[in-house]
Length: 134
Image (cartoon, rainbow, N blue to C red; front, side, top):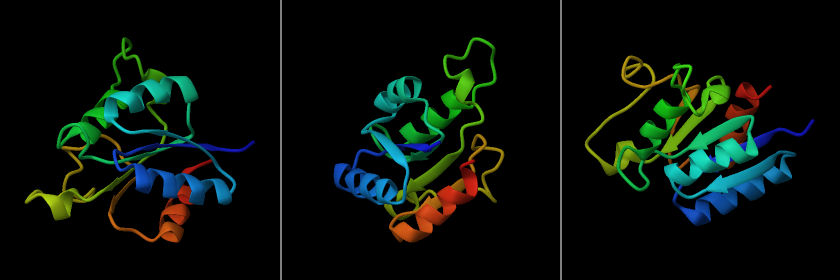
């Protein structure tokens, strides 16, 4: 079965590039250009893995998306996706004075499989995806 990757990033050029790279590596893809749109696409497309930017409609939109997806309440609209792997791919460390990493911010961030900084080599990203997609 072909695995599906949801790419949530407001940079359309990057999203298009990632979609082409993943499709040529044998994955199906879907895209959203904001966290709000990403939540809608998530429910509709039911991806196997999410690649998520942080700074979109707000500086923390990606974190808010991740918190909603990882919400453990029985009433969560996204409960079925609680274990869907999330890879954050962001330039937040270069664009702000904030510094985030999974090692340092584990208590602040919801469960995230990988925290990667833009720019990244496509083959590295594909390798990380292969590690986390089953």
